[in-house]
Each structure stands twice: as C-alpha cells, then as structure tokens.
Image 1 (cartoon, rainbow, N blue to C red):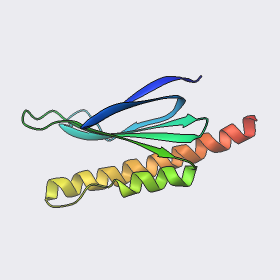
Image 2: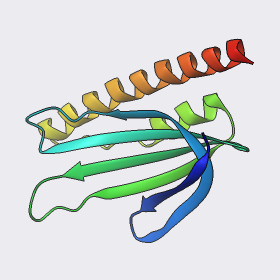
Image 3: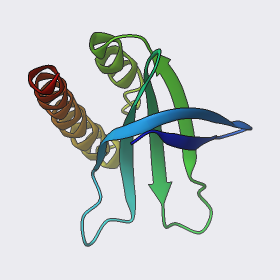
Image 4: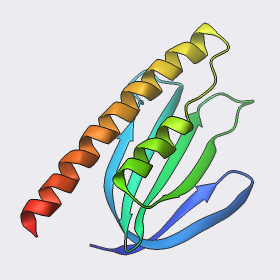
Length: 120
C-alpha cells in the first residue's frame, strides 16, 4: 500500500514522496556498533533508495542518503556507487558487509519484481 514516506538526508532536508516499501535490509547483528541499512521503495516514477550508516559510538554521527532510481538496474547502480572507501581493517569489514547487503538487496529486488509481474 502506498503511503507518504520521508527519508532523512545528512546535511540536507528530508525528501518526501509517495511509495511502497519493498525492501528493508541491514548489516546489523546482535553485537553491532556500526551498521548499514538499505531501504527501497517503489514509486509511480520508479524507485527511491534510502541508505543509512548507523553508529552507536559517542563521537560519531549517523549518516543518511536518499536517491531516485528509474529502473531496477539503476537501484543496483546507486547502491554500488555508494560503497564506502576502504582505509582500515575495520572499514574493510564494513565494506564486505556492505557488499553482502548490496547482493541481498539486488536478489530481493529481483524476487519482488518477478512476483509483481506474475501477480499483474
């Protein structure tokens, strides 16, 4: 069911749109102190992708991004273009987790889209 969605953006105003959430994936596990979350919404014009990097550390802040994507392929491109830079072993671990998350999101997007086509 479509509803009004607002996605936060770091250092920018939130973006609001009408859509339906079709994917909500995260790298968070029980012991995580930092993690990524990716949400994908279907809109009348294509998709909106919300990406968040969340932290529990005192001197760090959460970061949020929102992107428009016209096609399923664009969703994958947006997510892959957002891959974090690798500078330390900890960041390399987060990079691998992000890649795994990206793969899960792409598989889920394919599943959602094929289910939608079958239901039409």
